[in-house]
Image 1: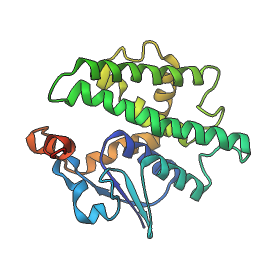
Image 2 (image 1 turned 90 degrees about the vertical axis):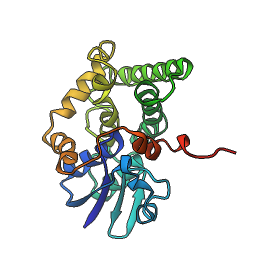
Image 3 (image 1 turned 30 degrees about the vertical axis):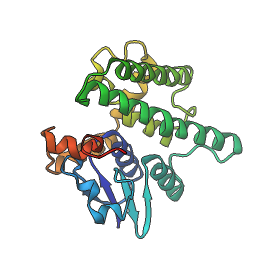
Image 4 (image 1 turned 45 degrees about the vertical axis):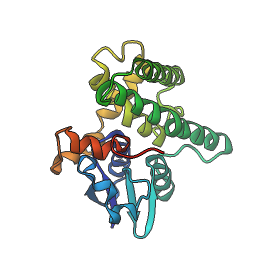
Length: 228
């Protein structure tokens, strides 16, 4: 059976959504990053990058959430656009936009707003700007479209949802005020039964909740690492 290494953060959540939407049987394997489980040798053998998520599909190991989305979608033939060069080009472009833009910049915006041990205005302002800029791009893309690739619900929408569903929680209730299309998509996906199951998955396990020195040392290695 497919093993799914996860926690409740945005990148594993979008993979959990696809697993639930596709009805794939899987064994969830919790990786408590605040406890440093991502650096255990057995997990580093799965993902040398020491991050979640990852999957082991009967020996086929895939890490990075967007690679997993594409792998599982192609394996099942579900949640992909029509099979034409134009549709494939759009899929890859927007999926990589999520991978290289949305995820990293949203993640840094969260870090510098909520977790940085030193408040750095320059860094906070930069990543808040990039958060808004990426939301603006998604907003424009959704103008006149139900989903990111048109009329079909695909892995690109799942990739976007993984991050945007947390925007109000992390950045305030009015964070969607300028982005009604992003809110519409996020709310529509969040209302799906598969999304509810994906979000509830983390509640089946016990996690370290304190963001203490141990947790910060495990999640933010630069705090303890020696830099040459």
